[in-house]
Amino acid sequence: MDSQTVIQFAWIVWLALALIFVVVEVFTLDFTFLMLAVGSVGGLLASLFGAEWWAQILVTALLALALLFTVRPPLLRALRKGGDPTPSNVEALLGLPGTITTAFVDGVGYVKLANGETWTAKVPPLGSDAALPIGTKVTVVAIEGATAVVEPTGKAGL
Image (cartoon, rainbow, N blue to C red; front, side, top):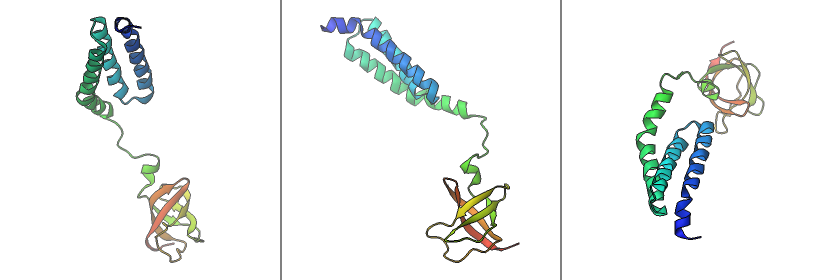
């Protein structure tokens, strides 16, 4: 296959790449693959104008990089503008106060959090070695799977 044949059918490669990038973008919604798809369209246009393969790649790379650094950031800001800033899931639990409801055995017990949920809890590995009595006020410092990692914040208060 000679160089002219490769250049002649390069548009198929650029079209396929653009379509693949658009499909991936639909699943990621990060605008990265959208910029790569538009860069591939630039390679497609360069191919249709008869540019050499290296020039097509150069056009694609420069266009994709320019879009990634100039167009993508404002698009991301616009997408995230007006979003709900309320923490959810694990982020909503971090820093939440709670009260120990069962005595901790080997550093593991149960706590009732301020949101009304009861969680299996443990103290951090380097945390307090002292026994934590029922009613001790604690704060969630991390979530490990289905276990809240808590640190005491006050005295027993039941």
